[in-house]
Structure formats: C-alpha cells, structure tokens
Length: 154
Image (tube, rainbow, N blue to C red):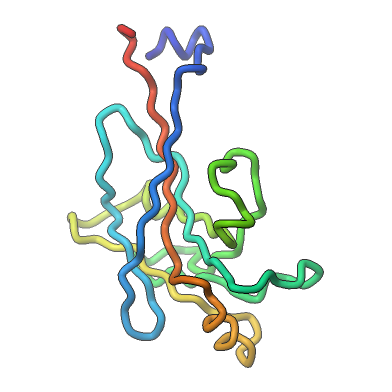
C-alpha cells in the first residue's frame, strides 16, 4: 500500500456507489444506520443524502430546502445543498437530485450498531415548504461512495 502511494499508481483503484433507502419516521424524518456494512479493503469516501424533485427549481433563486440533522447531535445541524463537483461524477446531478454532504456523521460515528443518522427536510420559507415536500419524486435516499485499493501483491 505504501509503495503504491509512493509511486502514485492509483489507476487500479476502483470506486463504487451504493444507494440506501431511508426509514421514514413521523414528521417527515428519515433515518439510516450509521454503521454501514462494507467489504474488507474498502473505505467510505463520500456520503450524500439526495433529494429528487419532480420539477427543476429556478436556478436564479437559492435552493429553498435544507436538511436538519436530527441525530446524531452535530454542531452544524442545518445542512445546505452541495454544488456539483467532479469528485462525485458517479452521481449524475440531473438524475439524482440535490445533494447534501453527510460524510462527517459517518466518519465520527459513535454508539452501538443501532446508532442512526436522521434528517428532516426543512424550508427557508415556511409557506412553500409543504408544496416542495409534496413535489419530491421519491423519499430522500443515502448515496455512499466507496474506494478500494488493490492488495500490494497484485
């Protein structure tokens, strides 16, 4: 592994995408397990909650929805949408919806196997929020990107 890092031979690394449905709770709260199953030699690199809307929003106005991280407790609990970035090109922005970065709760996961990350959709403008929630094409889902490095022996 260290030899590969030193030589910069990253061509044989692979990235995979997993999509997980959230479990819906009352009050439009959605939850996912913080302890995700993974294979040996694979590392979680990115985690996003995706909101897929029926209609595209007016790009000239700020996105009216935010995600409130309700569990675990987190200093920055109100999450803003992320701009499209090259490092997430496996997620087509048009097809997958608006992205909210949630990698930190997974990196700093505490608690037992039953620990969860939960979010709630909130609105900057209270009167339009219900209409926007109704315009979701599907419930929010969690997309995780995993990177695997080949074994040093080949």
